[in-house]
Length: 256
Image (tube, rainbow, N blue to C red; front, side, top):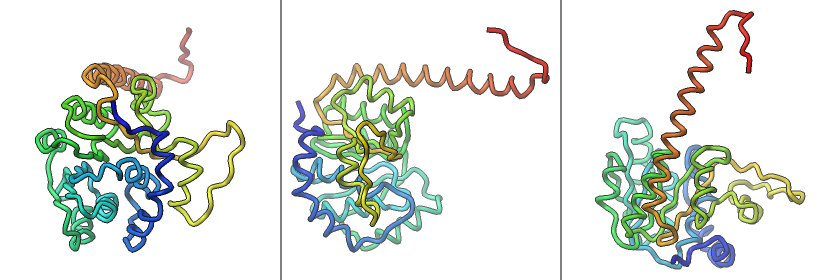
């Protein structure tokens, strides 16, 4: 079983904070990308593992790539982006020009990551999204090689997030209330306001950690495929209902 957990992260994070802030302070910032509090979530989770390789899927303007390169200077960062013709590709290349430990590639990460992954790699998925990201993460974990897989954009209320909460109890997320109270200030000069007991946290995009060896990931992958299929059916019927509603005459009523 993996030693990676939210409890361990919260215990270890304070001792990693100064190093993280020192290494990220000189970096340029981009409007798009994973927030610093989320990247610190990743760093503090796996820093003690001293990973030698980190695979990233979804580079965009390279904000997360830049941070990974800086906070893991001894690791090789292999970053995959799907579209070489995206306007972001040139921006990313310029921002990463001086980073000697970054290898930028283009292609479909759903095909490339299973070929590239080695034992004890750390993986960050910021594209594809939603169930496609979960399926990729679970397939990689099923193979038994990565130490941990991180998935971005697990927003509260999304079907993919609901799946994680129902079926993957070992996963832990960066919108945990204690994490947000302690480290959301990394994203802003303003301190995080105190929250009343039971008050929900509005955090937005969320990074989830899926530790190696903590679940029956083959079974979880099958469950995820079924959940994705069910979500597609719901989405299709929802769109048909909305279309039909637009086409109905004003006096049309539906009787339950």
